[in-house]
Image (cartoon, rainbow, N blue to C red; front, side):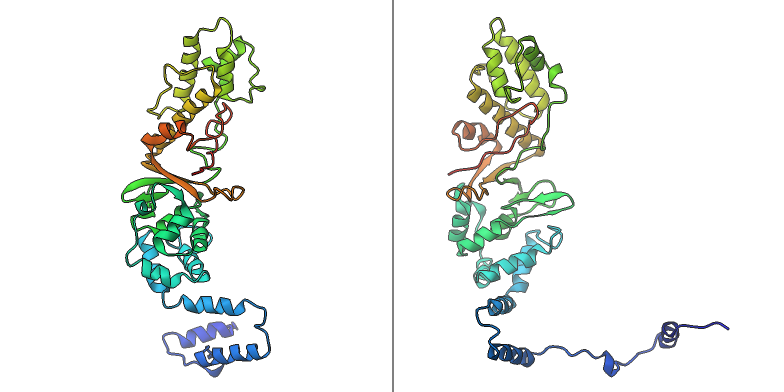
Length: 349
């Protein structure tokens, strides 16, 4: 004799039949009156005293009339539940706007949002966003600091804010960070780099520059592997022809930064570490831009250790890189043969 479980019997008997809800299946659903009475009762008991619970309730309720419209707008900027792996970024943005009492203001703003150029090509990002949109500076700052990751790709500070706020900016669905009116806009915060972390020369000692350090007994460790110091030290060596040194450095640069249209100047002062460093940085950044197809950069100071400069930004094209480095407005840490793609220097405007 075969036995059937109660679950199996129930499924066989109920197949294709309408099963009414039995009393035990009915779950009490919350209603407005019940919630109001619950809040009043908790208030009577003094449970809301010295608490931010009511503020949380208020923030939750205040966003309800605006959430649908804001969410639709954010979706049009290619922001979705797939943007970061830490949650639906649209809901996170709505929560930020609500927390600072800016949800109504933002809903009104997106009726006629401004373009990115409205804030100028440099300044303090949170201040300029606040002026352009009417949002509080605290709201702008929180939006700028939204970060996350998805499928191994990091979404850095500033990316989400720019896509959220400006009419002609949205998250890129192809290569790169942002789409600025059809152009590739790359966002770089403090300590970011234009390339790979710890990218090193495959075998420095076999390069012509490396061979020169061995020939002239240059201690590359004492030089901290810095190409500017190594080059300047070699330049001071008696008997070393300048053209030989230039060709060795140029060969090294062309090998490690093959995409750069900016080349090492023939008249570079090889005995000046500062000049060598600046020229190498120009090549480094141009190489990245041309390899990746970047049309515009925005560098943002996101370093909390620099309260006087945090939020400083500058927007520029690839072709402006050399001039901006000469003006000391952008830069990077020293380039080493053990670290060819160093971190960017903090922006200060």
